[in-house]
Structures are given as structure tokens and as C-alpha cells.
Image 1: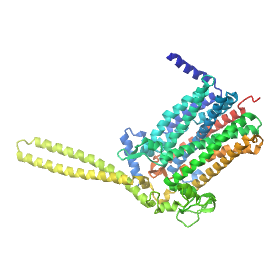
Image 2: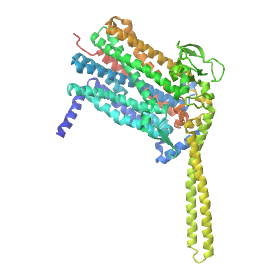
Image 3: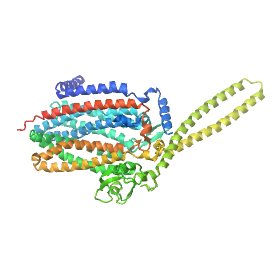
Image 4: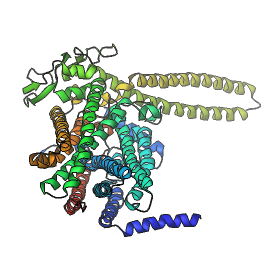
Length: 72
Length: 568
């Protein structure tokens, strides 16, 4: 019963994707976009700035120092 | 051209964020507006069983899908920017800003993602009722996404429901409900979503008009226009209504933004609303004697700004100079502080935060020292069992040391308490501690003023256009009015432009703040090299432009192909 339900859901998606016309181009664009965003941009251009610190307390001390120094 | 301008790290970081938000906001409102219209059309199909409405809904759904696919996840780039370019801000607000965004990601996005599959793949595979429910739930999910994003934005404009924890240097959520349902967030959500509906309605009316101009798909075009213009008229009316509510909140919570929106330097009681005007570019200082305007025409209802802001024709509206000089009466009965007084309080708050941490560090240091000395003395007393007098001396040393340490500890504890008290007494002005001069509190007046006028004028124009189109389409006269069809087509850009102008007012008008009064952009920005930010700015410019071109190309092809409905 469960397997049949899972099969129906899978079949629903497979048939849906197969019958797409313009959707195939759109999916290609989505996949390229996600690749560029998460593999290229996020890793090479948008690392977490505070990620260079291992512990939360180090991040906190860094931000505290920044906030205090910038007010001077 | 750009190289000649001295653009700092803050400006480039802001420009990058603005660029991303601009592009993101090209896709989002169309999703919100078109989503409702296609759902209404499918509802008509569900009620009537007429295949024509099914095909009509499916065509608009196709355009919705193109826009959704190109626009999806572009908002995530804004979140990348928070972590990289605005790291101090991200740390400072973490929990509060994170919660709405997390809910947006988990609940709303997955709701959208689940039901959108049924909406596109489910025709003839699921029941009509289930399909209709999926269509509505897709757009409800998209709207809920917008809600949580706007809650986060609303909090930046009006920080509420949080407590600052000086130990971890970040704000913590005190009340989720206060954050989620703050009056600013709610009004912002409704106003923004309604503006998206206006754009969606104008898009459908404009594209349908193009078919009429081309003399094809006549029944489809007129039927679509009938749905779109009524929806647009209602959305536009309520958008203007909520815009008024938004302006009164600005008057109360962000008076400097209101003053910039109006180009108002010297306020007073019973202030008029500026209709149109040209600001005087020669006015260089907020407190010089030069006129703010070269030319202006007020809206011909006297004292309208006072009335719209506070519901009283003689209500006091402070201008830029008044806000910086202070001394005017506030709504709560207090007298407004001057910018200099606020800056002073801000500096006390920042300094108190530093003192608090120093005192805490001292406390730990003394505890450790005291412990080590006590351990050393105890070890010594254990080694002199036979010499009682020597032991007595050491015991008296321990007692003296205990007293000294107790006094020192009390002194440090007082310092911690004092600095904490000072910090919280002045925390409402924390961000002013980073402001060098009062004039730094003035947002770009010209940009805010003109963007506000563009939004108002285009919004009013769209209201009239929807009203006229509704009248003519239901009188069966729209089809012959080619001039109106042209206007509807061109007005797609006006609607988009009005929405973008609204964001300019909201975001430029609240400068220099990242969080109103609490954190300016100068303290929020990460210490990156300007060149790195410039590089990513141009990468985004290229990426988004490619996406936009792709969207336009695919969409234009789909529109040219048309709904392919046999209208006979």
C-alpha cells in the first residue's frame, strides 16, 4: 500500500517532468543559477565573514571590538 | 564615470544590496500578483466548468511559471550578503532576524515548492478541487514568504520585541509576537503585497491589451482584462490606503524619513503636503537660509501632511532642522532631544558596553589571582605545622587578602552594574554613538523626495487607469479604445517603476540606519576591501542582467505564441 503510494508520487513527478515543454529550459536555467549561486558565488565570493573564527566567543569578541573601535 | 566618484566601502556595500533587492523585486511582485489572478481564473473554471477559463488560467500560469523559475532563489543572495558584507549587523541581530528568515525558508518555501508541482503537473491527474486548492496554496505560500521577509525588514525600521544581551553582544528575541506582528511589519506586508498585486494586474491587463492591439485572442484578452482591472482597482485602492497608514507610522517612528520625503527643513503646525516640486540643488546645509525648493505646488488641501501624519490638521511636523536641533514636543509629551544630545547618549552607551566587558574581564582576572594567592598561602600554612606563630602570621595574611579581594570584587561588581545600567539607560540611542556630526543623520533628501513623488503619482495614475478600464471593459467599449490599450501596455513599466520607487523611499529614506537608531550602516558593514565589494557588485549586475534577459526572451516567446484557445 505504502509502496504503491510512493510509486504514484514518483510517477506523478516523472510524468510531469516528461510532459514539460518550456519547463525543460526553465529547469536548466534554475540548475545553472543554483550552481552559480551556491558553488561559485557562495564558496568563492561570499564566505561567512565571521566564519574565520571557530568559536562563538571569538566572533562575539571580534564584533565587540569592531563596535567599540568604530565609535571612536 | 564611476572611477571619478569617491565611493566608499559602505556605499558600495549598500549599492550591491540595493542592486540585488531591485532585481529580486522585479520577480517577486509578479509572482504575488499573477498568482492571485490565475487562481481567480481557475476558481471561475471550477465554478462554471467552462474549459475556456481553464485554458486562460493555464496560459497565465505558464507566464507565472517562467517568472517564478527565473526569480526563485534570487532573494538568497541577499542572505549571502548579510553574512559577508554585513557581518557585524548579522551578529548583532542574529536571533531576531534569523527566526523570520528561517520560518520563511522552512514553512513557506516548502509549502510553495510542494503545491507548485501539483499546480503544474496535476491537471487531469488530481481532482479539480485538489488542483484548485494547490493553486491557492502555492500563492498563499509565496505570500507567506513575503510576510516573513517583510517582518524582518519591518524590524529594521522599527526594532521591537527584543532585548540586548551585552554578554554576547547581540539582541535576543523577547517576544516573537511583537516582532511578527509589529504595526510597522504588518502595514509593510499589506502595502507591499498589494503593490505586487497591482503589478500583476497591470501585467495581465497590459499583455492582454497587446493581443487586442494585434487583433488576436480577443475573447481571451477581454476576459483576462475583466478579471485583472477589477483586481487591480481594488488592490490599487487599498495600496494607497495602506500607504497612508505607512506614512503615519513613518511620521511617528521615523520622522527624519518623512521630512526627507517632503523636503521639509523647517517644520511647524499645520504643514501642507507637497504635490510636485523641484528641490533647490544649491541648498548645501540643513541650517542655511536658502529655500529648499526652486519650485513647488502643494496639494490644494491645506495642512494635509499634518492631518495624514497624526489625524489632526494642526499637528506639529518636525522638519530636518527641527529634528537635528530638537526641543519640539513629542507625541508622548516629552521634548525631543537634539542630535548632539542623542550622539552624546550613543557614545555613553557604546562606551558603557566596552566598560562592561572590561569590568567582566577584570572580574575573572581577579578571581583567578585571588584563587592562586589563596592556594599558595594555604600550601605555605600546611608546611609550617610546628611553628604556630608563623602559621598565625600566614592566617592573618589570608584574612587580609580575603578582605582586599572582597573589596576589589565589590568594586568590580559595582563597575559591572554601573556600566550595564548606563548601557541600558542609553541603549535606545546606541547607534548615535557612531554618528560623527548631526548632518550625517540626514538621508539623501532629493532621492527620497523624488522617489516618493514618483510612487504617489504613478500609483494615483494606475488607480485612474484601472477605474477607467473597468468602466470601459464592462461597458464593452475597451476593445475599440486602442489608445487605452497602448497605455495599459506601457503602464506595466509604470507599475514596476512605482514599486521600485516605493522601496527607494523605504530604504534610502531611513539612512544612515541599518537598524533604526540602534545600528548605522557604518557600524554594520564588514571590514572588507572596497575592491572585493565592487567585484561582486559587477558579478551580480552581469548575473541578474542575464537572468532578466532570459526571462524576457522566454516570456516574450510564450506571449507571442499565445494561449492557443479556439475562440469559435
